[in-house]
Length: 459
Image (cartoon, rainbow, N blue to C red; front, top):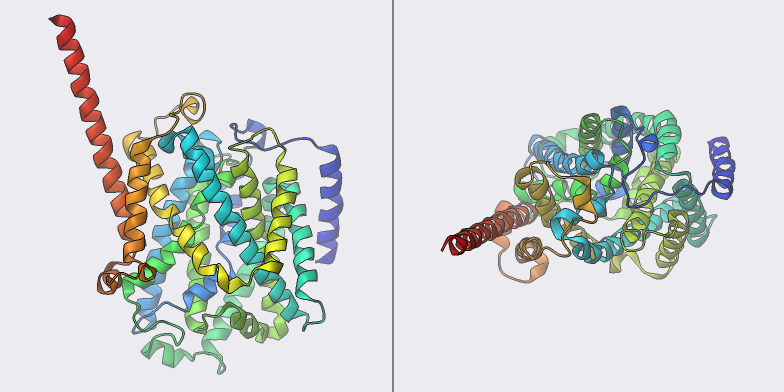
């Protein structure tokens, strides 16, 4: 494994010194559109894997394992369809995620979304660097300090970003990393299910997970599972824009993320441990820490995705700076924050910020697939787009308010309602309904004005 990293290191240093190429906000040149459906299956399988998914899975509440798995599968499928649909905008037009929002929210509107996106992406990168460093600290039995591991992972992440998504997917994930993780995941799942130290299979069939909240309903569990693929919506097009074929990219994204998201939620349900650091210790006990090592190796590409997309988002505001310098800055910032901010202070806040993108992308998808019916020119993403589209922001606000009202964090007494329907699904439905109604009214007003203008000319 070290030899692989060493070959990566040499190749990346040479590439950084000699290659001035850049990925910006403009449509990609055809020479970069080389990723196949299999490549996207590999990429999104890998990004669907994570220690945070295991932690979230512990909150899945059900009377038996069949109901829990039903919620996990339905949530993963629904969320992954939305993820693949968002990615298809990027693969159809070769544009990054933040640019894909311009026809819906306007050019200047996308600047506000850029700031929100960078904020949450750096937050997640910080969170994941913290998890990685803590996991490596546990794996090394504390012989190497947390802050040293954070610097090491920061360096690896920068190298991956400079290498670029094409080589990371084709050379690292497709040839090695994801297949090791798939094999290890299946073995780990079987080990946890039959382990006397975990939740026994017999007890799981007849009772809910020990880590689950007592007041979690089936729809709350479904809500929680859907939230994970939705958290990737703000960056999916940053990678799917490299697709050779848009349809194959859609299926690769959908199938890959559905599988691994389901597997890791099931692992979390079986473990029944919600504390992320306790999960690290528990996984360390399996096969002398080999599974923990595998997860550490795979988790790096999750941070890479967040950092690379932070750079792509920033270039929406200022496209002239090379992304390589941006990833160095954002990674350094993430490492510093990981060493300065206790994880408990921002984990819940990041989940809330991430949830804002559910109604946001519900509007983007509705606009692209229903209103415009995918008939949109490339110019609509650039010089021919609106400055700001008020109707989209009004619908976005309505969806966000709905989410917070139904969320337990709102302080309002709507617990019974949220238990029955959750928060994410109603917020998506509200934003779509508001957007369609407002667009219909705008169209009616324009039609009336045109009729009045025509009548006036006749008179």
